[in-house]
Amino acid sequence: MKFNAKIAVAGVVLASFTAVNVAATEWNVSVWGKRRAFTEHVEKLAELVSAKTNGEFTLNVSYGTLSKNTENLDGISFGAFEMAQFCAGYHPDKNPSITVLELPFMGVGSLEEEIAVSQAIYNHPAVVKDLARWNAKLLMPSPLPQYNIVGVGEAPSKVADFAGMRVRATGGIGEALKTVGAVPTSMSATEVRQALDSGVINAVSFAPHAHMSFGTVEAAKWWTTNLNPGTVNCPVVVNTDAFANLSAEHKEALSSSVDEALAYYVDYYNNQTMAAWGPKLTERGIESVTFSAAELASFKEQAAGPVHSAWITKMNDRGLPAQELYDLVLSTLAK
Image 1 (cartoon, rainbow, N blue to C red):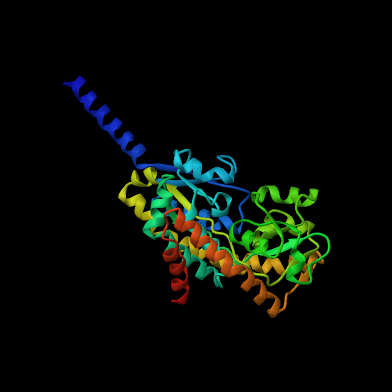
Image 2 (tube, helix red, strand yellow; image 1 turned 45 degrees about the horizontal axis):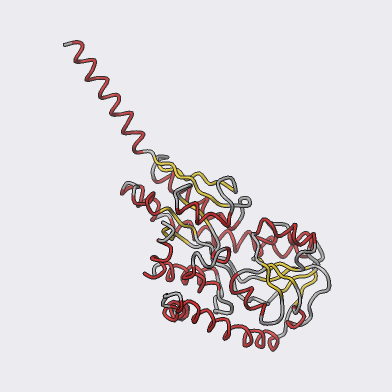
């Protein structure tokens, strides 16, 4: 009887220990660079999820130690980690459906609008299917403001002066610059400063936080204040199998934290990043280049129509409902 009682007690202890371990969930999250405005929603998401689950569900955010930024979608596909951030322009052929969000001159005017159009596109069945090829579920965007360019050498005084200039620019921004004779060069953000210093490129298209985080502003002689050709789209995705295996409570903790994490991100970007941007330019004596309304209108006319039409044709050929996705962006903005 005593022997059986010991077995019963041991069984209860073992069951309790096992239950605790089953309940606890730990995800690895692959991002790159260093902690900055671009990753604040990921950091906030981790904080919220942990708080809502009393520490039973944790997101371990790793900066460049799990994968190259250009390979994060691949890592998600085979479960090397459970969550990751990537930019569509790094590998447009892997995620063609979301490249609609990188088309130039789409009329997005704020981070809130960028969130709205991104979420509308992310929820479209064709986009869900496209990313499912990589075992990826789109969780939330990383909303970025309109890009502008910093450069070295002689500053452009008109848009035509970009002709022959080697500019780090991805996606639709690169396509737009190509229409005025620039030579867009695609490279990851972590490679840009060295390329600028060595003369491989003359200028860099980034959002303000990236110009500061990756040091391009330290080398720059000039920057464009109002070129505003577009932005890039950098989703946060989760591995589909990992998400499916979450308990109902942990799924709810993750999903219900997205809006709050994005709200925190927008506040951080608007009130901290942008507050630091102006003083940084002044401190370094960087020349401001402001184009006339006529110059910008000409650039838009030259770039927007042809680039948009070419994208629709190309995506139709790939079997995507390109016009439908394009119209969804415009109708979402109209609302």
